[in-house]
Length: 134
Image (cartoon, rainbow, N blue to C red; front, side, top):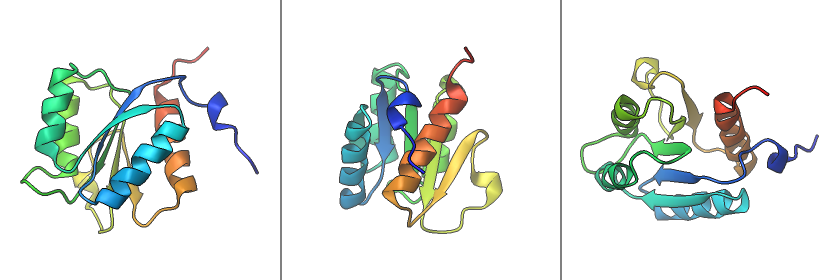
C-alpha cells in the first residue's frame, strides 16, 4: 500500500532535531527536506534549546534522541519545550528501553533501529494529530 505523504502533511514548517550521531542527523535532514520541511539539527539539547528560544517556539515538530551528551536528555528537552509551547508535537527516539513515565505526554516514542518508512509514517502520525479538523 502506498501512502501519499504530500496529502497528509502540512505544506511547510521548521523541525528541530536533536541527535548525537552525525550520520543519523544527516538522514533526518535529508528525510525532512524530501518531505518539504526545513530543519535545524543539533548534537546536544543545550544548543537546541537556545535555538528554540531564539525562534520563540516557531516549529512544527521536535525530534529528540533520549541519550544525549551534556546532561539534558531528550525527554527532558521535550518537557522543557512543552512547558513554554505545549502544542509543539514531539517524537522521542532511543536504541534503549525508555521507561514509560519518562516519555512526555503526547509524545510518540520511536525505538531504534527504525526504517526510513517508519520514520516518515511516525512524522505523519504526529503531525496529523495536530491538524485541525476540516
